[in-house]
Image (spheres, rainbow, N blue to C red):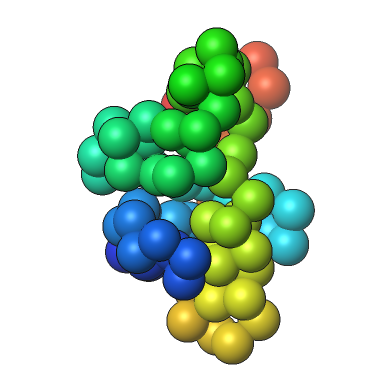
Length: 85
């Protein structure tokens, strides 16, 4: 995973892209504390386990991928059905 900062708020996360549509994000801090969008939505009654994403962070990740800052790792291995990995 690669570290990336949100261009909107500066929140740092770890990111890994397996394809243009599949992105894994690991938050380094509590999302509701670190992210203004999550904090705003939590104040309205939503909580981080129900909020799918932050639009500003998603845009930051997409722009980093377009610029080549975040690499797309197409070599992800998948388990073979019927066999233990």
